Length: 114
Length: 113
Image: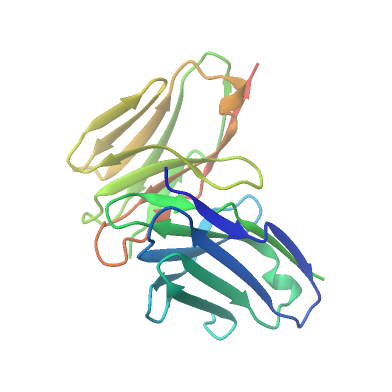
């Protein structure tokens, strides 16, 4: 089946630094990738939708300058959390969609900002 | 936009009993309804899905039913086992445009041995 590889699986960074999270579709071309954020014991909240070669569409309330999304190829999307602060600590998950198939999730990244 | 309501938020059942989780959606244009199982700190795993042209789908101990008129769909797990314990999320998608999934808030299922 379809596989999405997400890295890193966890990261601890200092407040004010930036962190990049990568998602790669390993055996299919992901025309659309989604980035979610999940707080403990809560649901997945969609942050943004990215289509290869175009700008990401951000959900209401998500700061596009803080959460930079790049989808430069059909197999790679990145999320960069810029100037991270403790309140950005969360579980970030990507999801990729192949045209005719369902949604495949990455393994998630646990971000802790200290 | 789409709004998905999920109930109950927690559910405890004895091993061997059945578990039912219900979801409602608001957008009649939604046509794809997956269910995910998520264990702590791990990715959501698709366990079953249903499209709007089907009323029921079954896969061994798991079944999903869809009522398009009422805009609700349900997950049924029979003969529950301790390893079924996890958080379950329903979701809905229009399957058009951005194809984004809207998730319910999740149900924490505990199966008591």
